[in-house]
Amino acid sequence: MRILLIYHAGAMETPRRIFQALAQAGNVELTVIVPQKLKVDRVYGPSGWLCVEREEYRAGYRLIPLPLRNPLNYGQGFEKAPLWHHIKCNRPDIIHVFDEPTSGYLFQVVWLRLTACPRSKVLFYGFDNIPIRFWRGWLSRVKHKLIWAQVAGGVAANSETLENVRRAGFPPNRPLQRIFWGIPTEIFKPMNRLVLRAELRLNYEHVVGYVGRLVLEKGLAVLLDAMRRLPSNVHCLIIGSGPMRAELTSSDLPELSARIHIFDVMEPEELVKYMNCMDVLAVPGLTTSYWKEQYGRVIGEAMACGVAVVGSDSGAIPEVIGSAGLIVPEGDAPALAGALHKALFDEDVQACLIQQGLERAERELSVKAMSRQLLDFYNRILRA
Image 1: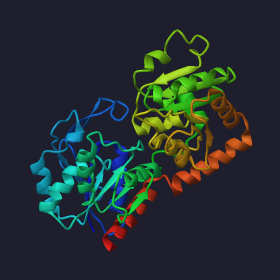
Image 2 (image 1 turned 90 degrees about the horizontal axis):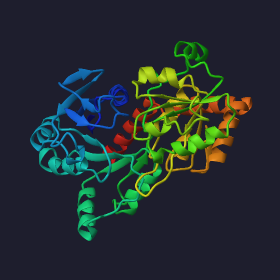
Image 3 (image 1 turned 90 degrees about the vertical axis):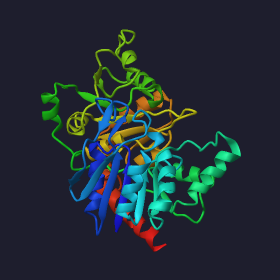
């Protein structure tokens, strides 16, 4: 089976682990096309840029960087000629665009494939779970339906994305499937907590963790309110970047300043050490008119490290956590504080959450689980 993946963040370590697992999962010839240079949030790349300078062949797959029309806006797609050339030369059975069902990447690939390799089956992989809005009315709706008529199926990291695209007019006879984004469990795994806390100078009795963008919709204000309600021996370890960093370090938080510890974005090999210092991870996302939690990869990373997880009921958080964590109403600081207290101080609850989380991470949220399900879906598409 020849597979061509198109992905906008090929310089990141986790996607490369997914490519490797997929290339080694069966009789697969895998080529991955990524941008040469792309501007991103610093959460995804400490420099603010993701760059792949040259073609690589590694771990069973070929990685090809191509120029974007505009590195500051990947939604405008690639330069057409190089992408068309590689589709024609590769002649893939499957072209999987790792982007939203409404993305410019997907639309571009659909049209180029018509002349480059018409037999290829085009798929999408989405995250966005906000209902699809056709801002230009019926003309935009018709355009999307024409594109989707050329798409063989789709995958998403949450069920709501698939419900929304179907409701917006995606053909009812084209298969859709939820497949969770994979977590590299060979990186994120349990480590000696006491040794790491001493090494990293995080010798606090109880640690609540947060990893992600430092923005209001991630529920950080709710987390701070919950921390005020927890005992003084509970500290909060926050890892990320964003506009709320100044607020989190503000002198306006005198009663919390000694208990809040903020670190910048770090690579996975370093992040796993800090994550293993946490007793519980908080994912207190808030729904807005333009965003809600689409997946939350830190959930799987924490579970794989043997860390209990407490999340809000916003977006995909409950779906990803399943029965392996505690769910509270979004925006409810007292409820969040109560759940964190239970995960921290009730030994039976904590042990149960840790065990269920470890099992869920390996069985449903790992890179291996994702690659296996993707390969099954590709075979299903080709059989159809």
